[in-house]
Image (cartoon, rainbow, N blue to C red; front, side):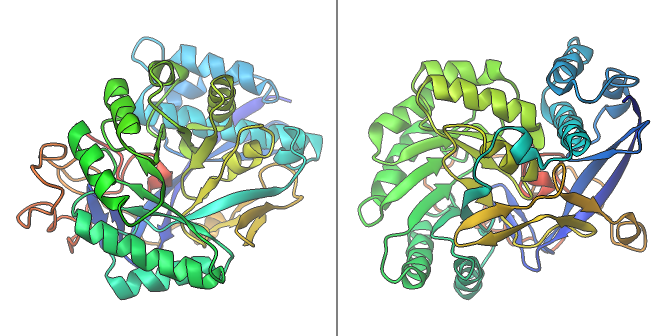
Length: 412
């Protein structure tokens, strides 16, 4: 079997409500989902959800190769981008191609990927993650009632701009999940997307912990700040979670060596091989791993095969437009199907025009880090900047990567 070519598509996730985080909100609830299709001479096509950045150059490392040599081809793609580097959307393109190769390998074996990778249990524990900072109270409650109907008993909220507001919203969601679980304590997490300084993070989380039991605080400071993340972890009771924006094991090593992370995350867009390697590295430090992203189907399959998987992020309960997934959500878990490969089917006729496409990226918007992020005196929204951004009415271009285009990711 040989790799003969590739095709790229871009569809959309239609949330039906505003989605975003401390960096901004997509007010119309439509986010881009790029797709890569890898073709072979035996008629098997693999699907990867992720960016197309520099794909022509990266694909040169794959053309004519046997797609079943996935991990070797992953390293070959890294070498292909060695000089310029593999960060950002380039790493996402490698991840999308890698996921498509795993899809081909499992299809060729006639097995679902979770079985091929050695998974025993097709159920993958999940938590609800609504990208919800732009929602009012009633909208927030309605969104998490929807998750609760599928058995979700843990939730991660977006916050970081107003601690009193964060506390109120966490209490609202706690009540929803407690009612649905007949009084059992739900799991609560808060993601501030690198919006705070070290001291702010300790001060604000400690304030929240007066009335709430937080499982983790996610990305409280900048992703690469090993000392800062470690200091936050030492000053609070909650765990520190981070890793979704790290692109390569070399970026994880300083954090793990410094004891800076308690829950090791990896974004779905970075690919299956990356996740497997991150999981092995984390396991060496006795740390759990948690996949991040919308439609993280490749990592869900991989999660069944690693010993330290904790829980996976569930964002939208619906698949992207034109995409169907052989999985369902039941009793608080993703339940993977038996279709060979990833179980992803792409209906290209539903993706092509007249389907709405995202606009070109703008100089300012949900995919761009706010000018004063990490430099606010208090975590109370500056009405001239922080509050205005999450409630913007004009939707800029979709972000280039992470969360399959659903969450702000690009920062200067």
